[in-house]
Amino acid sequence: MKKILVVLMVLPAMLFAAAVFAENDLLFNPTATNIVATHNPRTPTPFTRVWTQSAGELPIARLQEKYTNLTLNWAMMLAAMSQSDHPTVAYMNVAWGNQSAYVLCTMNVPESNLFQLTFRIDLEVVGGTIPAGTVVGVSEFRVRFENLKTVLTADLQFEPDFFPEVIPEGGLTITDQVVPGSWKTAKRGLIKAEHWFTSVEPPSGEDPIVTHLVDNILVF
Image (cartoon, rainbow, N blue to C red; front, side, top):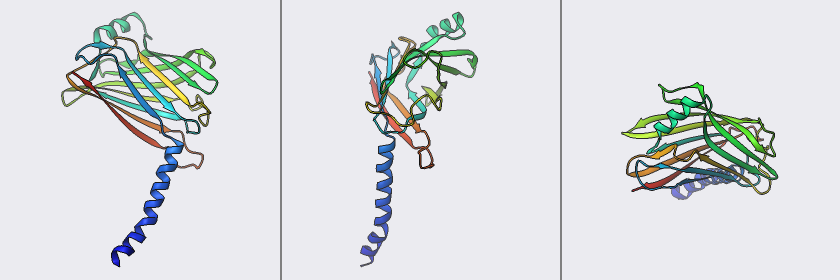
């Protein structure tokens, strides 16, 4: 009898938690795909990320990334930094509804710190239906080391008014491709790609929703 009473007492809380999780999935459920063009270690490679959202979701306000066992092609990067104060590091295509933006991601060398391995990346629209010159956001990119493995991290803050208040019909797709050859695979084993998506504040005024996704890529 006591067991039945305990179950009856706990059940409402379980149902409430399930309802909250289901509601959050409807409000904010982005996906992430990582495409590495080679499985060989220590090899420069094209690297593409694709993020998607469905119609009705809250837009992304912040995107944090962590890539374990990927590294930079330092020779290529240092050469680019010596030739320009704003070298291109990635190309991004953003599309939702009837809107599109071709975005150039450039390293802001004066605002970066090579000795601390911290780099500022500026994102600006250069084509599409969104006016050229529109600022998409700013990313802080870092290189560090964990357990003898190279770790690349990025913290991208989108401009508050860049995305619509709610993702429209047709959904949202963001395709981001780093300059081919500027990233390299590192050691044999797994590349661990982690993404933390943070939504804008829900209309209810509650805290933004955070989703964490993990993708493992084998390096032979």
